[in-house]
Length: 65
Image (cartoon, rainbow, N blue to C red):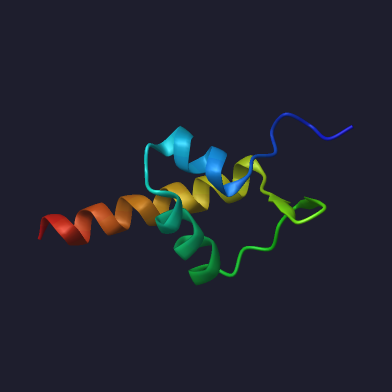
């Protein structure tokens, strides 16, 4: 069974309170490969989520300038 530390892009968006398309953009920008797949669903690890979180932070910094 898959660990509970794996999240989909939508779950990451909910957790970070960001639009799902922003999360998808960052996944593509950083070329993050899913840690696991269940059918067409891509799952990401906590380490990858931290990279996405840093990307969101950088976007917020750029928007505030």
